[in-house]
Length: 98
Image (cartoon, rainbow, N blue to C red; front, side, top):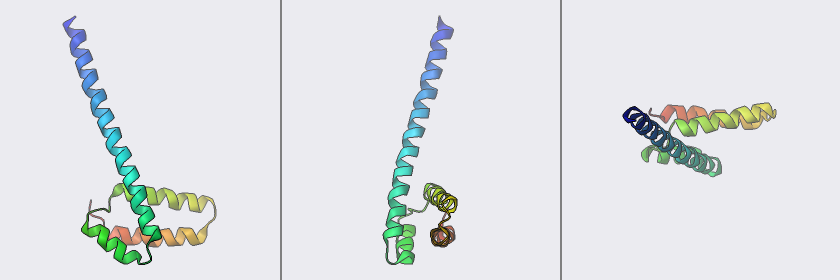
């Protein structure tokens, strides 16, 4: 019976940690979506990126979402959109601190 209790406690801990990691990832993705939309809508992309650097808002989640958008644009043969987003990606990589 004690072994079963230990197993259940370990399982509970693993599931709790998994839920916390998933919740953090969901928040990161939503934040990345908002930040990417802000970049796209900005008239001065460089100033927006610099502002985001100051606030430490450039991260892997943002880069991953941008990469997904680039891949979708490539699949849809939207060459101008691909070029536009690749320029933004290159600028982000200059400032990204991992």
